[in-house]
Image (cartoon, rainbow, N blue to C red):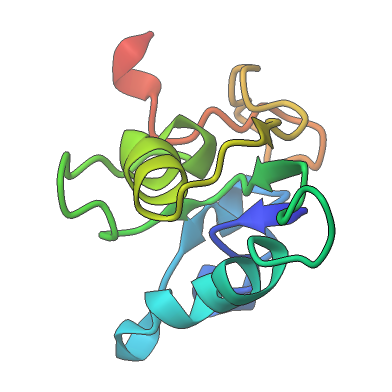
Amino acid sequence: MKHWPGGGSGESGRDAHFGSGKYAVYPGNNFEEHLLPFVDGAFKLEGKTGQASAVMPYYTISTAQDTVYHENVGNSYSRYLIKDLLRDKYGYDGVVCTDWMITADETSRDEFLSGKSWGLKLLL
């Protein structure tokens, strides 16, 4: 299933496949609403597994949602979103599979197939 913790909240409606859409924002503090398809759906399936077998985090930086470490990094890199919420709070024990290009370097051109290592420039 994808994209944890929910897609479609791109700043000004921008597409997260491009650098101009790297930020997810939650006007009205509605972050929790974006989690509902996961916590009330994909994590509560009928059948043997009881949950989806794999989850893919989104490219975006879920701006100002990390209340523990205060990191504004791409969701796949977020300790808060992956460990604290997905694993610990919601008990998800399936596979976490990253999306394409998250380990590639960002380029100066805003292209669909450029790197999406957003929020990690300080680590270079």
